[in-house]
Image (cartoon, rainbow, N blue to C red; front, top):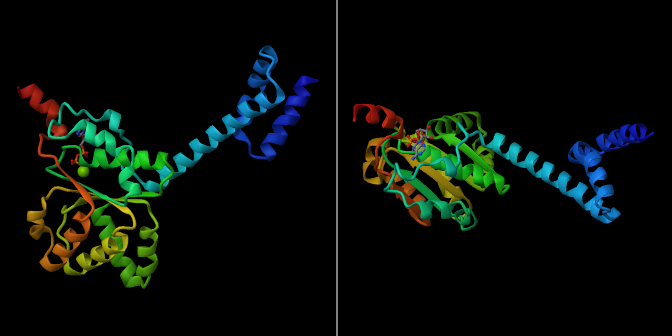
Amino acid sequence: MVNKLNDHLENQLRALKLKGIITCFQELSERAVKSSLSYEEYLSLLLEEEIKRKNEGTVKTKINKARFPFLKTLEEFDFNFQPALNQKEIAKLGSLEFIDKKENLLFLGPPGVGKSHLAVALGIKACMAKYRVVFIPAQKLLEELMLSLKEGSLTERLLGYSRLNLLIIDELGYMPVSKEEANLLFQLISLRYEKGSIILTSNYNFDEWGVIFSDHVVAAAIIDRLVHHSRIFYINGASYRLKDRLKKQG
Ligand SMILES: Nc1ncnc2c1ncn2[C@@H]1O[C@H](COP(=O)(O)OP(=O)(O)O)[C@@H](O)[C@H]1O
Ligand SMILES: [Mg+2]
């Protein structure tokens, strides 16, 4: 009898797509009997589980949509290895106030020092807070923008990027940026200026951007908008990728 009722309940819950409740209602109803919970208390516990499950689903979708190249957290970052970084300052970024204030974060420094790791970790935190996030390598972004220009869909593409709460542009400077690409990047950055945050990582300091951009005027205009309302972190430590090799040699 109970089994039949449970089967029926399961079908009803499935019809309503209440997956969180399906997994817990039997256990919770036993607990409710044992602890003499009121109907309201029992219902509240069930709904709590459903909300938890829905939230987890939303965060998972946000993380998938963000297209991170890997998943790493702030907790996994070894600050002892990178003493140039102030742990408290970085941890504070995790409160995501910079997104509310539409500020940019710039992580600059040589390869392997954890620029992308920090960008991903903050991006994941933003997804967990239900912000719309996209992570994209700079080269891919430029290719996409050039293609959209050719196909006549640049406006839609730029609009798509302008709707994000956080756009992470990784590894600017890996390849030189042509005049046309620089113009498109300028349009994108202007569109997001004071409207949404950007996290940008680059192997080059601003005074070296002449190497990246053939057009220095556009480069200066891009830097101007990026840097206004921004926090800049110069990470000049050793490469984490070489850590174990250095240890072996030492
Ligand atoms: N301080 C650190 N603590 C833990 N892992 C780190 C640290 N710095 C870098 N890593 C790891 O080393 C690898 C290279 O880091 P990455 O963020 O890609 O460097 P960058 O973007 O500066 O070239 C990644 O796997 C990253 O997780
Ligand atoms: Mg990187």
